Length: 126
Image (spheres, rainbow, N blue to C red):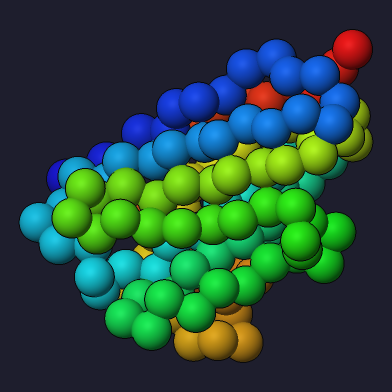
């Protein structure tokens, strides 16, 4: 059974940096598209960023472009989300997600991902 385990969440001051990690228990990560989603309090879960399998193409929610960076280390079966200049509106539970065979038009759709972590809480507050 494939498991995803996020880490790195916590309390961070506005404007500061936080790096999330997600380790996936598979033999090879190369076939998987890997994404990060965020669920703010009282809201639906939203797409944040994704890295597509093989090509490693990167996609971001418009509001995080230039501040967040998604990266993957296939040798370590890990995907990262570096979040710079965080603001309080980005508080929420961050989920790591994985899927195979996701077409480009569905990369931002959470329903396209069939594997999910438990989430890690990120609180941006002074």
